[in-house]
Length: 219
Image (cartoon, rainbow, N blue to C red; front, side, top):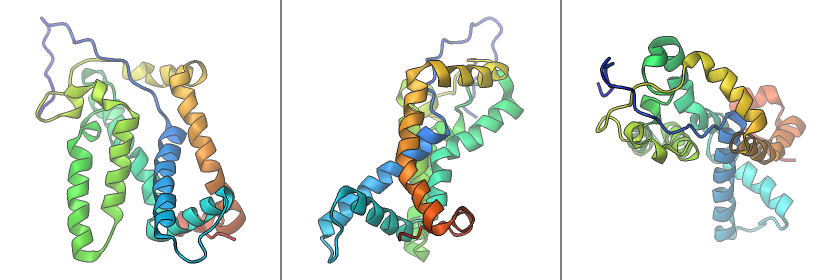
């Protein structure tokens, strides 16, 4: 199935170190990229009543983006490869395979989602799978999966054997968050990007209504 089997006589290959990015980094940067694209689209359309000033443009882009897509799906999509692969690694495969970046960290995963999403959009005008495909694809970019081509191009290649111990994963991750700029800088950036959205939700929509509907009210 594209996973290497354990060979006692052959040492496990040396895998490149993971580029650590956690929840706020993935969610914030994925949301920020979508928001920037929406703001550019609104500016190009030059609609009547187009907002002036950065703060007003951000509010308008937020409202427009929330009308077009479900922001909850965008957030789930930004984490989807980890939502699937990490439990699979920790609870099922253990230390035998990879470093917690398995089938959903491959190029074929967002590709299949995008193709299925395009079909669903043409048939029923539903964007859900396209949103998940966007979030998952950007997740691979932010994880720097081009440094792990054996995983990225599965099933053409084989997901390599070995890597870090699943038992040490959480401790290593927590240590990197506080000591490694490659880990904590994206988290800080993601938090800053998400701060305006959090303010809009708290002051307007309300957290409960946002979780139920995914809508954002701009006042």
